[in-house]
Image (cartoon, rainbow, N blue to C red; front, side, top):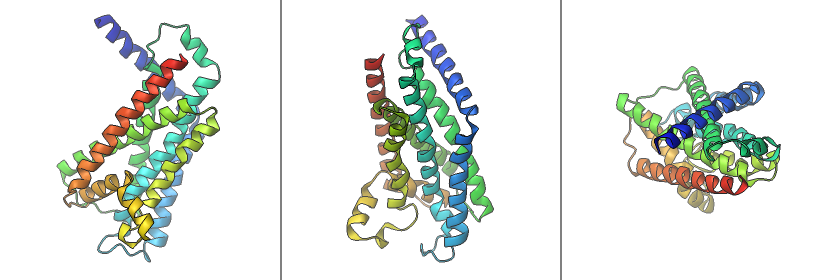
Length: 255
């Protein structure tokens, strides 16, 4: 039993290193996943910040959590594409002939995706400081923020892995992930939900991105997150567990 666990961790580490090397050999994808949210931050913060009405908030402070989630959703499109490429371009046939733990490949892709998205998030927050982001969070608040964002990144990554397995082509995998890029726009990420049309407001208030954004924003600005924090943790935990479980199940069928 101990040997099986040791082999599992070793296989996962090898697959993680492989996926990181693949990412480093495709710097265009990393640059695009980083540059796009930076331009969004600059555009919304510097261009629309003077005309947007979000009450007492500084607009850069208001939109930062939404920009982060949007960047993660965009970056994980490449995770879905890479997973699908492994499943459709022949490498999986080689893995079948090796004594490889069945979920190690998925864990490798998920781990590499989380690392890439953490790097992207750090760059976005750095850009936000340049355009006027001034957080009021204390040390404990930042620990909670980091935890919520890591769990959110993990949940979106697990969903991307499942989409990569579910799609029939890399383009299809990217298409399945596209709605996640749109969701932050139809949330409290860029405008208060109470300013929206009734039907859109109902969707915006109850979709999973909104409580995550509200909780992170409140913590960054030193306000109590209230129930949004617990709802965000529930959404992200459930999504991560279910998405990865379905991904492993589908992967085992293909193996």
